Length: 160
Image (tube, rainbow, N blue to C red; front, top):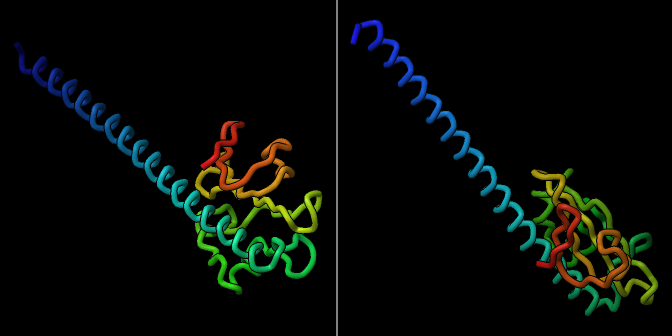
């Protein structure tokens, strides 16, 4: 084998090695991104459950959920009056798009403020939405009664 052939073969081997390392790096990065997204979703679901529990305790003590339009009005960016009264600290805002709830309502078809729904979008993946609800009026639930924490993605609503 000539010296030129050995150099060419060495260059090809080096290119193959670098290609393998590059593809491996992309695979590892993709796996890490996926793990981070799953971890963030798990955190968001756990925080959403704490929020749900706080709203249920609020209702038990105040005989109604926070109002969507009059005092005590639910504030989507501060979680008031839940925060001030110690029902929920707003921890989920760290993983939400714009750091706030997208929408809140306390429909009155079951009685004044006897149901609620909250929709939120994850900051890291806007295709993933969270629904915290005790209502049949939540837009993501298509008129079905939902109670608890739900993840909406790929057109499907799954209970958590």
